[in-house]
Every structure is written in structure tokens, then in C-alpha cells.
Length: 120
Image 1 (cartoon, rainbow, N blue to C red):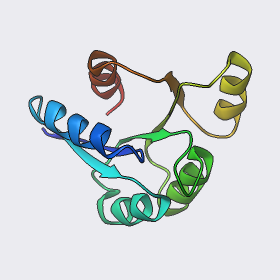
Image 2: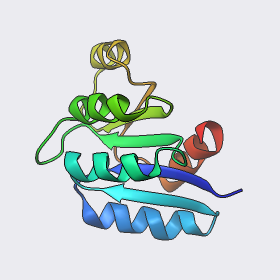
Image 3: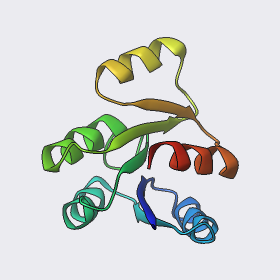
């Protein structure tokens, strides 16, 4: 069965690379660069998407704002916050606010694949 995730990040090259690399493993990646794009994609695909990885800061929103908006649509997904700037104290705070996991950027392709295999 094809696994389906959403990656929310304003780095277009990261989104394209993830789509191409994960396609080899029969994993579909829906990319979104903005809060609005993430919401539109999730509204259409929420029955298929089981894992969402979101950047801590987009151009127009924070990862927490994205999480809140997506959970308002449907909260049946594993949420992962990706950031290069999260401390242990921040990690506890973000988990308390609803994120399931926090990963540090830059993350490797192998780490991404392991997360998907475990949670998607």
C-alpha cells in the first residue's frame, strides 16, 4: 500500500527532493509552502495523509499555526515539527502544544524514511 505524507516547508527545493527520493519507496509526498496551501491540500487529502512534517517557520505562519489549522480540519495524523533551532525546553513546550515529535534540521533522507516507516 502506498504511504502518503505531507511536508510543509517554504523551501521548494526540499519539497521537490523529498517527493523524488521518496517516490522510489512508494511514498507519496504532498508538499505545501504556505499555511493556505497546507490547509487546501489537507482538506482534499486528509483521509490519505497520516503523517505531516512541518517547518517551524514559514514565510506566512509558524508551525504551531499550521498544526492548529490542520487539526481543525481533521486531527487524525502524526505531527512532526522540524527545526534547526529547537532546544530541549522548546521541545517540551511544543509537545505540550500538540506536536507528536520534534526533529532537528537538517534531517537526513534515512531519518525521514525511518519516521515514515514508523508513523505513516
